[in-house]
Picture 1 (cartoon, helix red, strand yellow):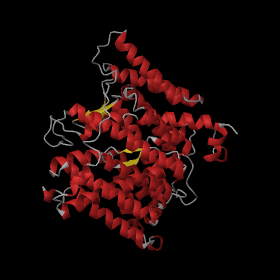
Picture 2 (cartoon, one colour):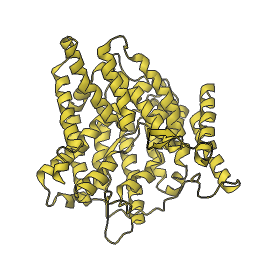
Picture 3 (cartoon, rainbow, N blue to C red):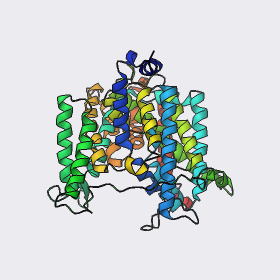
Picture 4 (cartoon, rainbow, N blue to C red):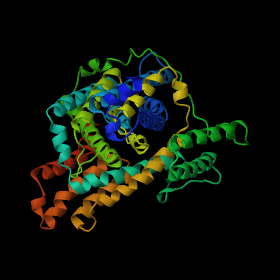
Length: 470
């Protein structure tokens, strides 16, 4: 038996209706789509001299650039570890890395606004991860996720699709900030990034509609080459944003690895508990929402909208968070960009193993791994976002008590830039509208408990309690 046959047998590739080639291609697609985190996470996690709120990680004797280089390596190691566990233990095509939003909460709220030492913030991440491991081992996380009302479960995929599309369109310069309407159309005719992005997007959509294998990867690569060529040989200025920056690598992460230990010194118990709670809450529901949403895109869900054996990918998430905090980065979570690989046909852990291997390989060539401009890689998010909108047909729109929680879930996600907030809106509204409609028999005690938990969370998260600690 050859290597390919052995690998296919271990991951049950054929039983899942896939092939080794498809899984490898799907893994490459996911990696290209989420590789931006190697640069973005360090940029968010370190001190920003342009604002007094973003203090992040500061290490005496090291420049911001050197710290960002360390964080790039730590980001890669945390992502590779978590995704490897996802592959060999859960056998799911989901990729993981330090999560956007959670790293911003780390640097802006915890370290910047609350003034908590970054070592203590890392200690909170490690504690959160350990709690997750325990809760996952006893089945508590799976139980809570299975409490999600069915209309909310089926709405998550569409909400994530809109969220993905918004992220992608912003990176491509097509959607921009507007002081009057909050969002608006970018200056496409005069912005080189937007021009190349639009051309690349429609080229990719055409390939995808035609059913060309690897269409998303082809679109990303061609768009990148066009952008580079426009700068190198065309009339476009070198600083137009068509060429990605590079990150110099350093492999000495000793100032970060294990720094969480010192973070337990002089901890104020109540504030520390609130930080752990917030990390815990957002990570829990971000991961749950992503697993259900991407699982829906891959047709992994059962007739009740549940992901079978969800405890295994949840354990991978918990292990990744714990390892990441110990190494020196924020909470690891399942990436919604996994949907790109799933849409390319990824169905098993071989897709995740490919992503993990590519993260490890990027240790040697960090500048090359990050050389694909964000506007090019994010074309995949728009394409997959559009495709995921079709999941909306799984919702029973004839019943108003389904429409309200499902609609809120879908709308709140992109408008608040948070998967967790969308899920919160859907779950909190479900028992209320069911009770008001006289259908309280459909509501379980757990639904009320989850709704109450979200109310408490929003009080904490939006400043009611945390602000009092400033």
